Image 1 (cartoon, rainbow, N blue to C red):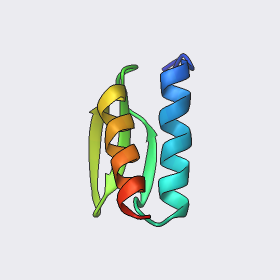
Image 2: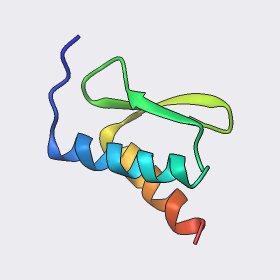
Image 3: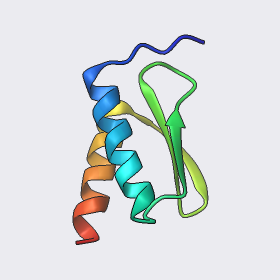
Amino acid sequence: MTVTITPLREEVHQLAEKAFHLNLISGYGDGEYSDEYQIVYQGKPRHLHLEKARSFLTKLIQKSR
């Protein structure tokens, strides 16, 4: 599977890294489809479209402050 790095995907990846290092999520990575991202939150993997993943991670990080 080849995944194209887009600006949105890169932004989601950076947000996921930040959330992971803040111990807000326990895992992250590319989803099965090119427009999805996988986030492990509260022990459950979630497959979200990139826009929803960005929104979810942004809100999660903001709440932690």
